[in-house]
Image (cartoon, rainbow, N blue to C red; front, side):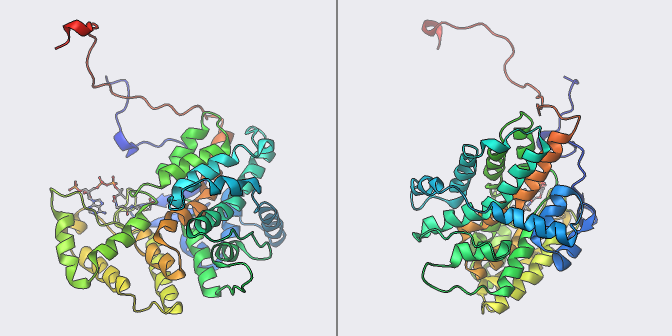
Length: 393
Ligand code: CMC
């Protein structure tokens, strides 16, 4: 109609102004609040990154201490939630459980849902960040039939998550510092990524004034898809499907075949057309974790390295500017840590929660904020008269 800009999949529409995350897709740059992801991953930690995303500045020592105390204070979930978990089928996908469990939190915390009160917004934000690992670990424990492990507040964020996932009652569980450190970095790498599909979902859900916990549940639902957060799970499944290095060319041919919809999972990105800076960090971490856990000779690592090499030298991928993204190596790393594939996207959700909630809060504060309401180009039938049943052919 000429009245609206037609931009399917929003490839060229900025939906908001934001001060949180900067990406330059041509140069492979990712910055949180101006700090390069490489520096945050190398020198920082996840809790500090959460503070940075939420408040806009790196914390001082005492601010960090306070923040960590406050987040720790919120790690428990209501005991009643255990019954909620127990009502799921044992073989439920943990992402399905997460969508529901986080949505259910909306029914618990009525004292942090006045979205126009910045203090309540911050409490809701901390609750979200603190409770996600607890819920994620519960989803995991439930599917493997083990008792839930309560959060241990003397541990840091990543250590506590490993503890809740892998400790069992009456047994000592020693946290491997190499794994805890790698997990902390994985959380940093996934913490925010400006207006990706799930973040846009959270913003648009929140733009109606909806409950913040419900908005995050919407984000989790969106993240689940294989084109988005589900790619780490899909990438590892793909490596298994390929199986051995000699079968790579056959698989690549399938990907290139115009008549097939097979994609190289963990490759390509809407914004990064040069390389994904997170993928580089992830690849190094993958080697470190696999060596630490004695998986250095994992045949899937060999397949991944060879697949990457072949794809990076293949015209199909070169012409389309397809490079490995963060998910190409994260699956292998998480698997070596002991997580089943069904938990990979859940871990992504744990990390991304702080980004979602920071973006949600920024949106609420934005004076230009209105309900998100895209328009459409109508391509259906023009007006026609109702036909009585007896006269329909
Ligand atoms: N394997 C093979 N071909 C691909 C791939 C891929 N992974 N990605 C894009 N292409 C081709 C696509 O077929 C198209 O070719 P043609 O022009 O001949 O039709 C061209 O490249 C452009 O693709 P597109 O679908 O228009 O690109 P997009 O920006 O809409 O898609 C993407 C981005 C990430 C959804 C896509 O690259 C993809 O599906 N990748 C695999 C899934 C994946 O790894 N996702 C994780 C993204 S990073 C983490 C996250 O966001 O959660």
